Length: 459
Ligand code: UD1
Ligand code: CA
Image 1 (spheres, rainbow, N blue to C red):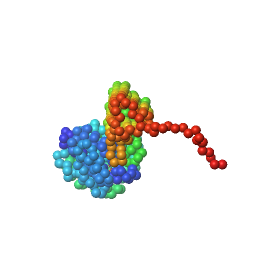
Image 2 (cartoon, protein in one colour):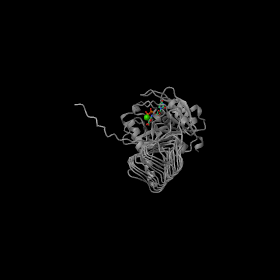
Image 3 (cartoon, helix red, strand yellow):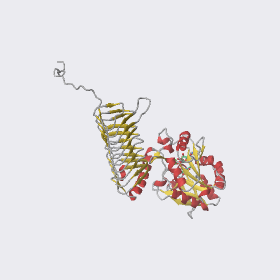
Image 4 (cartoon, rainbow, N blue to C red):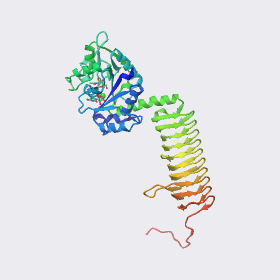
């Protein structure tokens, strides 16, 4: 059934009320552009062919489409936004006569695949129309029915009589109809209305006049079909999205201190007894093993954390891999390319980048470890810095198992610190340090000056 369905997604409008330089459909919900949600619902419903109608910000939208992992749908440009019927007409030349057309809006992002499937099934009788009944129908097209309850047309609010405005069943904008007939109806739509626009809704009246049965599907919730036109509605849609996804994770066994203070902007997979405190953000693809505990106000972006690891407050973990039974934070920063073995401790104000840390190693305070390969059971003292960058190129620091790097040492890469090597505090190490020896490089003559007098303020 879905093989012959062609989805047409309308996304040419300017979105003036967003008051933004970014095209409306690229504004994100749960970290993904609205248009991405719509396209994902289309593919989840098993629809293979999608057509996009673009206009304002088309270049930006096409750049985003090209950046996705999946093949971009066909897109056409609607040069002038002359109305929703005109927009659909732009895509129709690419749609075969035998197709069933499903029209969606790029700014109605929370539509579910199940609803799309129901709408497609409704169109088997000739025409499917997705409606919703609202307490406050303002702004929407109203559904007109005859005395037998059959749909006879849609009237836009601006063109409606006071009696028609009292109707609470409204048009969501989503329709499904056979391509051949839709093409004919579109050709008959005029712009004799308050907006001087070619309304797609007029197609419904034309279909009814042709004696085609119009089957309506009721959206399960009004939230699913709510459009986003301004930042307020965007934030509302975000909350709806978060509530849905967070509830699903909680049912899968995620312990959240407060679901209202947790945000998912990607996908999270969890083991047993995973606990996340308040204020955390999960982005990209994140996987947390059994018994992982995340403290308050952490950001986890594209990370894998193995069982039993604890991440303490205010830590930022980005594109990293963390082994089991580690302690990370508070205030730790793992930048892309960090790999921690098991039982590693990374403490406050420690920053790692492209660095591998072996099992049981510790860097508990104030350190920068970049482009380093660190063995097992290494102790990195407070204030240690790998000098990995000479202003033009990056170099690697190797530190062997069981090495001890004294506090406030600088390791000037490229450099090798041997196994069991001991670097005295305050050393600048620019040459390799051998295994099992103390290496020291600091000014030798510590002096105290008995004749020294403390400077005084001039009177
Ligand atoms: C439309 C419906 C209305 C329905 C409402 C639901 C029409 C005439 N009216 O009204 O019955 O209740 O949606 O939200 O269809 N677009 C284009 N090109 C255009 C015009 C619009 O691509 O020339 C796109 C917009 O970017 C948007 C969508 O179509 O994504 C809807 O257009 P909009 O102008 O917002 O329609 P509404 O007035 O909200
Ligand atoms: Ca709208």
